[in-house]
Length: 133
Image (cartoon, rainbow, N blue to C red):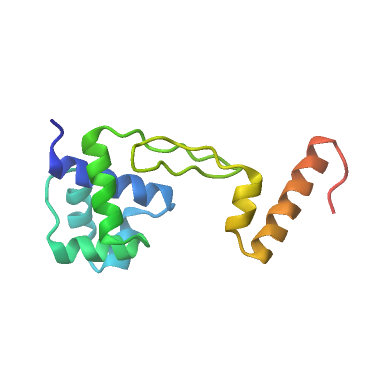
């Protein structure tokens, strides 16, 4: 069975990396020392409830999100793979449903759709060798 303390640290480290934050940036955002955050990430320390709240907030997550990620990790639920074109979110049973462009567009705000359309046109033009401008 996976160690809860190590798993908690691994989730915090993974989420920090996914957000492109350095250890120092996460420590500053959560008002913790760099050394302490490093010890948490390496499974040497276990965060108190207050520390967990600070870390979750610094990562723009809820405590429930962090705890759910830890639970999924302990259960061995595969993590979703992200790519440059979109995202996937596993459902409660761990299955990763496909998100169609139509469904994704329905989830977005109008300005986000325009941005995605612009990006799509840019990459299509680039693939076809058209000049960028």
